[in-house]
Image 1: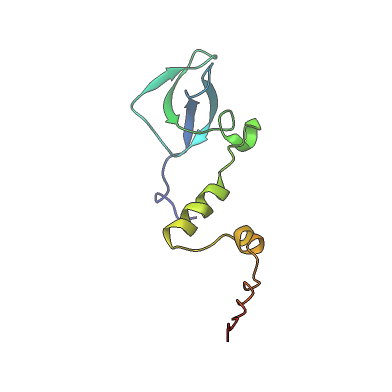
Image 2 (image 1 turned 30 degrees about the vertical axis):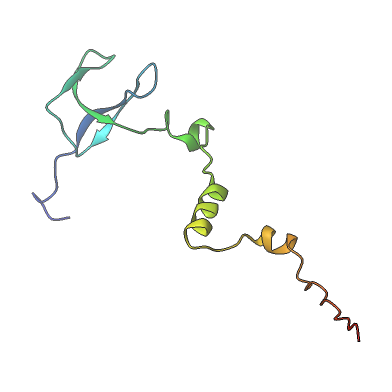
Length: 105
């Protein structure tokens, strides 16, 4: 590695305040912040606030949010005048019988 080109690597606290109690983790990073927090060991570290962590991410919490893709597909089909596959299967494709012409002569 070239000397003096890399940022300083230091201890920082990442905090996710979207969960209760706030999720905090002490780790090392090149990120820094003016905001400080006192850690359990009595030392003060830079505080980095994050929006999502393993404590709040749906994949890790098991609270997956399902997207209504069927509703989105229906909106798309309505917008462009397309028929649903179910509607096409339900409508009969047989033509109505032709009327027989009768002559009175």
